[in-house]
Amino acid sequence: MKKTALFLLFFILFSFLTYLLSVDDINKREIKISDFSYIEKAKIIQREGADIKWSANVKRIEFPGNEKTAKLDTVDATFPKDGYSLVSDKGEYDIVSGKILLHGNVKATGDKYTFYTDRLDWNIRENTMKTDSVVTISGKGMFIRGDTFKSHREGRLTLEGNVKAVIM
Image 1 (spheres, helix red, strand yellow):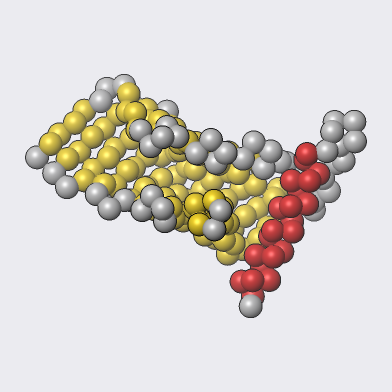
Image 2 (tube, rainbow, N blue to C red):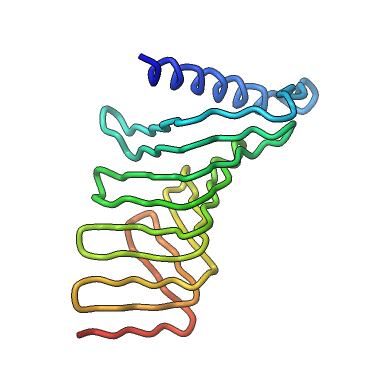
């Protein structure tokens, strides 16, 4: 029951913030959040029809002052349709653009591989991810390293810059 109430509170706060940020510039109101507001143990769910596209458990979401970016602490996301999970120590969620920047021990784990980097830009609306940090991907009998990474909407992945692959 507490989780449902907490999620409902988060949803109402998020909806309110989204509404306030979408008002025309002439009518734009200033968001008045106390100097430091936060939600603990939240779950964010994005659906595609009746299916869950992804969900993320977040230890703490902070709304510092009048900023349009929420600070995320300990993010643990799952993508049931694609069969992988994504974790990081920290993150920042830009409420206006719908982009999430994950940083600190970013790790994606799938059935056949594990992906590591220090930071990852996740564009929720475009369903893409990218980083300019070093990336390593390891799996059964393989290790790949590159300086940058991009995932494309159709599922294609691109590693660039000093790419090294070892196949055992």
